[in-house]
Length: 507
Image 1 (cartoon, rainbow, N blue to C red):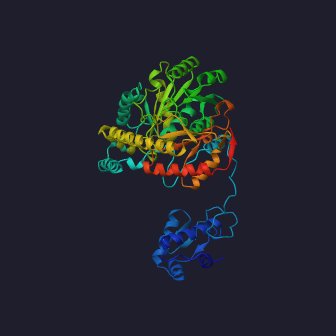
Image 2: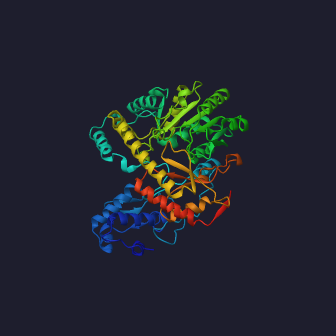
Image 3: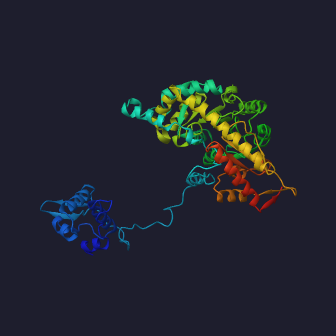
């Protein structure tokens, strides 16, 4: 097939967004890669081809020059232009020009580790679209001072310093110092700036810790129900997920010690358990620390939203009680600022800092520094503390509005769990007179149809959880992301969804 015929099959689009020379370049490149233009084939002169296509000679020259620079063509003035004869003979050309063949499946199956990595977060849902009630674990973006943040960011871009080059894997030094002071004052965390490693959110922190500290087959205590995003990196590391029940006092340490005495790690949310909202009692905290110290097991304390305590000051961290060096404190800025920032941190025991920093360097060298530098200014200039005070007050009002609306509209259908901390509220279904309760999935489906987001408690249960971890069916309702009026309207929609649910399950 002649070149003119090849180009006629896929004519250039005049007036399109892609320049004509780029279109011609792409068509010639495609013809060479498909074998329609064989190695050594002679191309028309630039004048001839420009006349045939009705384009300027400069358009053809630009396309030829680009292909020559990339090694597809060779030649020169007075020599003609040829497809480079050194190119390998391609496979037989496909039938459709400009359409590469689509592989129906992977070139080869994923190895066991790759399959585990690709499937570990399959059960974790990522909501998108407009933020609505009751999206769980979502801060109120309407309350964040984005204009101020932009000014701080612009200041760094106008006066770039050496910190905008490569940095140590542990993170921006001024931010580590400020976070250290903040954590010591607000959460009683015992640390130095050198113990803090900045990560791309708490999820990366959990992945790094799992890869660094766990061997295949090691047992990990996981709260059940609990945060599914934490189970994923542990599974990828080859760990055994050991589901431990949660009671009104938090993780049942005695159950874990009895059933999984050889575990090497514990993942816990002692300040505000997700999703049940309970706080681990002091007795349980001391029991956990004693067991971990005696068994040389690591404890990951996930302190994801402790800034928001609605009935008093934030509680002291579990790490502040640790004397054996077994607690690894993990925090995030997603709930305080905004999730897209992707900044978290680890407060590691001193001996773990260097291995963790080196592991961090393998993954992404270091987290983005510009957001860290902006956050450091945000904290140093007092904006961070003001933002927490403002959002704590606003979330307190939104929490009260939700509780009032639930009490007025659904008091006979739902019972509320602890609500003294966090951004969410756990509610359980009350049985009707016959002892039946609505099915979680049916209520969720009808609520979504009414424009309401929520999570069922079943969503937070690991598939391998034992019957001992079962909890009464219910829902998790986020209240921080939207104003009080929208929460009240959403409660009305939720009530209709529950009342319209005709599917019940025996208690």
